[in-house]
Image (tube, rainbow, N blue to C red; front, side, top):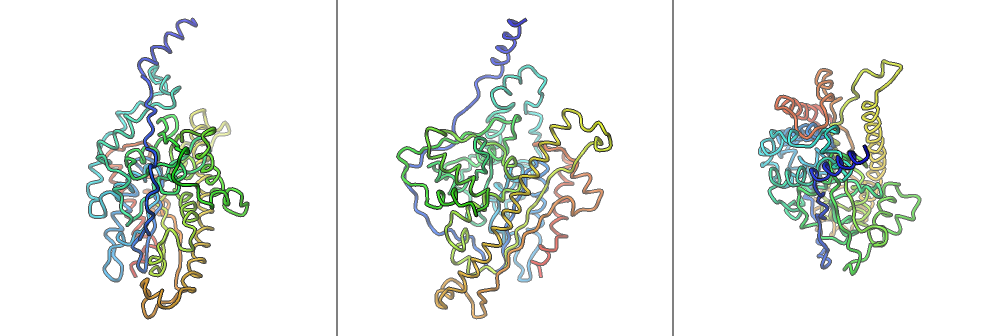
Length: 449
């Protein structure tokens, strides 16, 4: 019996093959210049956080972007042209990255590139198939050939992180499995691992953000602490020790320290960003603090030109399903696992949203202090007009979700599964839902007045 079991495992191993564990990044040869990044802010600005949720999230956030493209402010400028920043997770990261790569006018190609393809049927999905047992033991049912390579071939066409513009700035979020800290494909994180962010494929970044545990093997980032051309910035050690800072920032700072310790971490194994924060707001806390300025990640010109910043979280989370809440016996095994995972993801994102709300309030306060301390001539040089008021700055955070829709639409869209592709009719309904949620949102409508 034991021999038969070993033979079966050997057969499964042969069928599964050796997993691809090639890191997707390269060593940073020299510290690149640090130019001032202009986000192009002028008056009203929008920041978007596109949640995870597979094709459900990709489609819903796509509808949201299309509606922002159709809506205009009082001056006739499209609202989508006021988007300065997009942070995204998993399914939302596909949409955000395509938007960054092709711009607002190129969004029309996204549906045919990603949403209308039956990717789901090409995946290994059965936990019962013997060939998949070894894949699970190797870290996931599907490797880069079913995730990063598909995304590169079908959607991003060998695009690199250097191809993304600064207007809007796109931030793709994953989770470091070892430390549990959020990990973003952004400068502070790649400085910490001493790696070249610019050469990373867009497909690998999005694949890391989408690598749902067990369904996909983690994406691997190598650390290069030896002979690194730059030291960790002083704020990392300070934040790791400062008990008054948000816990998310402290844990990220501690992770950065580990990335420079070759005896502890040689590789960062990245999994779905939703494991740590399904909204992608955590990385903004780190990026904001890493700027070490009262206005970052704005530039000084952005800081002077800004009047109102509206943060919109486009939340495509599924609603609770099943009827086990009406039964004293409760959920069965699979329903229990699904419910527990949903609870943990929701708890993490709520913590991140609350932490970001505090950071946002501090950011607004420090920005006003900076503006009001500027000499008049310096303020004018940075774009202040004759009627400029240094205190006329307001940040607002709002969440757009299926709950903003009529009951029948809410129940239908919230009940759709978290998979990588959906039938055409369901994609249609999700896009329409994203449009409707944006169009009816008061914070968005205020930008048109």
